[in-house]
Image (spheres, rainbow, N blue to C red):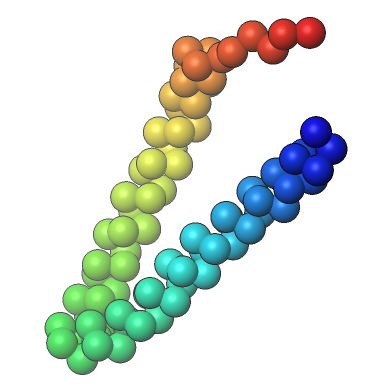
Length: 78
């Protein structure tokens, strides 16, 4: 049990960093060809639109998060 708990402690941050850096690498690889294809203005517009959508999702999570937690709450056996 002890080693399984220790492994889980390492797995969650590892998964977080893996996804974070994969997305960062993909964004870096796509950025310059996209700028050359459609221009800086349109890339900036697309970036702003993505950021606004993500901000909306954050606001939605803040507003509905408590009801989501109550809906999916699981009793912890003692």
